[in-house]
Length: 487
RNA sequence: GGUCCUGUGGCCGAGUGGCUAGGCUCAGCUCUGCAAAAGCUGCUACAGCGGUUCGAAUCCGCUCGGGACCUCCA
View 1 (cartoon, rainbow, N blue to C red):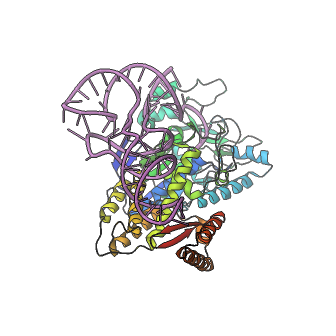
View 2 (cartoon, rainbow, N blue to C red):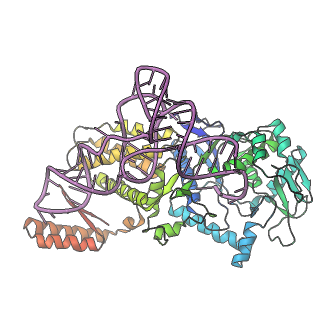
View 3 (tube, protein in one colour):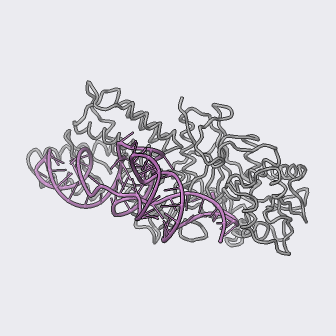
């Protein structure tokens, strides 16, 4: 059995992964707030956890992967002021709030699919779990860790801190946290500076609101994840993930809420993915330095020199470890695009490899290295480095410079299936799968004619065929065993 | 201001004490009618200074640079 090690934010160390109820694994990832288009930073996080989910499944775990859709309760601006983001956007686009939710949820799913992310096992929405959230708030109040003022319920952080380590996830003491917070003004109704809203009273103009024991209102933005993870994964579950930017507030508060409600720390392994930067600056909605996935695919953005296929982008992102910042640049993207193509080209070569009586390479050792890389905190860059070793082996074998036994060729095929497709979640670009059998036969004919021309030293004709095909986007590769082609 | 992370060859990016990933770029070679593809070789890097050690990119200290969080954000 493989020993998998995961960097746990809670302890800031690499720990061996031991699920509570093997082979079952509970995985929760904070999903998007669907009030605008997903941007690439979100995509990176979801892609990282998609890879993590895929690897856990590959290892034989039965994973329940829950990723929520936040479709209510996010406030614009300060914790207890401002408009609901959905209501604000609804006004802007002159739509019902739920039309906003629908529009961007559909868009989100399209992008996830383009990146070949597997759908989660459960994708619960905040609005679908208002009852659960209210129940949780009630329980926190009755346990003495929250209080109601004028229809709004606050979590009492200072009281909680007397019994529990509130700043555990970011390794901070309460005093340090207090220093970083502004003084309460006269307008504040909450008691402590760090207190956050669990339930927020609706204003007369609030569009999305629900009845509760404290009057009409809507849930605070941390309670939904606590309520939904608890409902589907239980009081204590294995892995909770999300972007690093959620660590200090959202996840810290999630732990506090669950602890205050269920008297247990909810999560054994916290995992955080790092940020995406553009020219060294974090890509974010507020900074305005981001581009949307469809702009990236089409290249229709001032920062982009050209469009990049979703799979090339996926490969690019997986070439960096999930816990490192990843800088976006045309140069880096183009480098990855070529690497990705080389990897995919070798797959085609692999299908036609001729076997020998003996092997010059130890493919089992290579396979072992691939597992070692992944078992070391999902080290995809190292995995990819090993896969390029396989590329070299395949191409050398194809050139006749190296011999492989039939069983080793089979092992290489398995290696590609397991790691390139199942774990990394890469796939052939959609264009290449569009080849029809007819085109295949036509190309065979064309290559045949060209081969004859070459035999007769009619290079004018053979070059003309090559150049015309090139113009049409078809590349000819001349090898020892004849020519092949690709789009 | 407080807390924390980080600085690797032309570019991207692994690597936490010795065996110096990988991709891309550039140059050369092999193959080839030529080119492309492929293979091989090279450009032999770890911000600076000092310390610990038989030995450091990797540990410690200082200096300089970059970034994150503390306020909505994956």
